[in-house]
Image: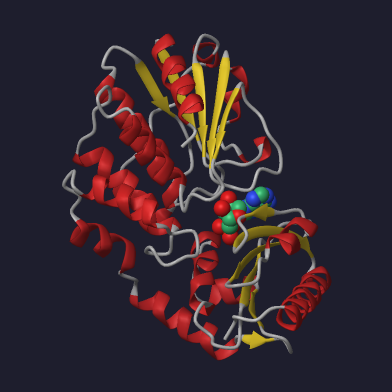
Length: 328
Ligand code: AMP
């Protein structure tokens, strides 16, 4: 699929001696796995090229994958190729120095709200950006090299972004690429121990979520996690945000969301929206966000606007239920 654009990307990579990889803010398993995995594949395949991945942010639960490169001077970017992975819009690119690169390539699987870059390879139907990197490797495997380290990064993204191969976007193609990557020697027991195991205190927080969670009339489950609750359980914003999956298995809720108070002066609240059957991204897009059909993010200001978003989501789910069959 998309052979011509992939070929263009490989040719560009060959053309440059220096390459910088970029990903999105609030990084997750997919953007971290895809950038680290692609970097490793390129390093193994083109040992004479300088390949950098510079990002000051690393999600706590992904620290086991190791650190990124130290920052370099701005002038280093000017003769380099930039490859931005898993990032739909420029505003979400974490290292803003992508702008200094001579040329930029976008590789992504999000719904494209906006396009940027000199070469664009977007496949919305892919369950993860890592699946695209696996596909890129598969397409050119006669020319590219991979090892267990690269495969572990890529497999991490495939596993996390697909909800452990559970979400709608998972296809036979996903599994074929996963099989290829798994055959490179990924230690799944160790990987799952790093991804699944949770601190005792965090499970207590989850218990509180189950105690406080609510559901709207038409089936949107939600919870407000204000600063007080974050302090009570001694949580970082990232830890508080990670709980969205806790609400994912309520029979009557085909959409669910968490509202996390950021604690800034503007009273901004991060919203993480998830759904099954019904697509929730139109609601995210209405509130300064976007993402995937069934997994999006948004930002609201103040609890009143949060309530408004909930009302819209409830009406959206109601309409879906009235006009569709097939949900439980
Ligand atoms: P989150 O709940 O923040 O993990 O977001 C779910 C998905 O939506 C991720 O793939 C994000 O990259 C994407 N997303 C989150 N916030 C935004 C936004 N403001 N604009 C576009 N996409 C977003």
